[in-house]
Length: 226
Image 1 (cartoon, rainbow, N blue to C red):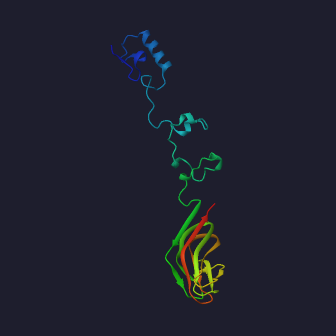
Image 2: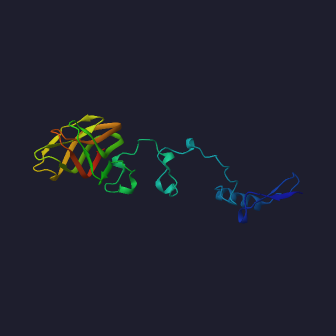
Image 3: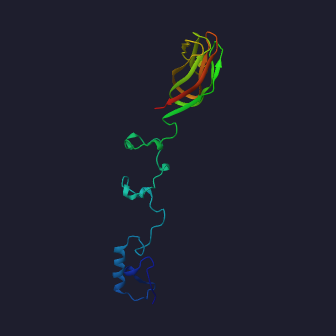
């Protein structure tokens, strides 16, 4: 006689069986086998385990995988199709500033200077240190400049303007009431929508002669992308 036991079942479900035709038949063999078949679920000791990769998407009914079947922190960006997350998928009030890339909503560029500079040019020239060159993303760009100006001659004027890519905007004129009298001037330019690299400058002149001087000055350029 020759008898052995099942290798994929254990405990009370490990049934014996004959390996030779002359082996004595025992009813207990069939009873244990019946229990093993009834408890078979492919777990350890209850039958042959399923091989890796056996379960494929064709074996899973569409729409049957629920949230509880997915381990936490396992869905990555690589599993999400591009441009499929919309505003309805995002809870209102949950996007924080730290989640936004730098300059994603607004881009701010600022330059300033304190050392005095002057010109005798009757036509507009660049104001020292008042140039911003930036790459814009198609948003609305607003430039604002301020400076403290004076004229060497009484009643002589000061022109002050902003230019975009060497195209001057509207100039403002201030007539100095007395020689060397200093006063602040400010100008704002709506530059419209800009894309790519552009240069914005503050410029000034002495349109009536004399010397136009400028002390502290600042140029602020803001792009509103949304």
